[in-house]
Image (cartoon, rainbow, N blue to C red; front, side, top):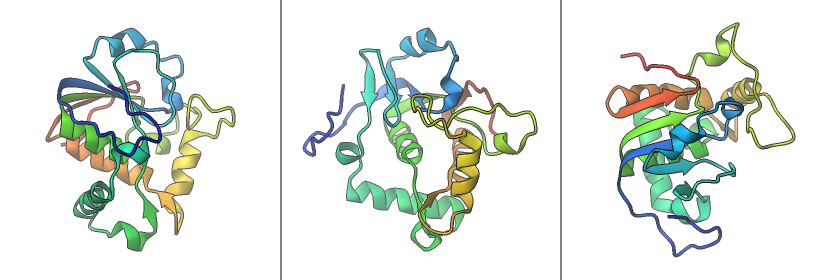
Length: 184
């Protein structure tokens, strides 16, 4: 099922036993997991990531995220962090909205191309672009650090990764390429 850009009257209402949540991270460059992803019943791709498969669900902020869903996500963020998102000056990432969508519609989730919260602090981490499809090629970890410490208007990517790790201890969720296991 596709969500068409610009269609405010089109809503996603479906359930999948297993989903692949595919990030647009540079971690996906050369991953070689296309066939593996294509075997999964529902594929959710983030941002403007290129997709070739017929089963891909392409998210669009204007059709899939309502004012009520934003308020719900704000509440989830506050419950998970103890901080009011608005007061911290943060914006929730597409990944956060997509992860909540996947938790709502999928019994189990394989997350592709999403690093853990400590990845960028490791000395031997791979340097990859923030988005694999962009020509600008801004370094993913550099982008994460800048946003995490921005006073107003940044995403809290690293904080969000720690939230996903906690969710993975309560839901059927695994992280692939790079593979990592949540603590817990």
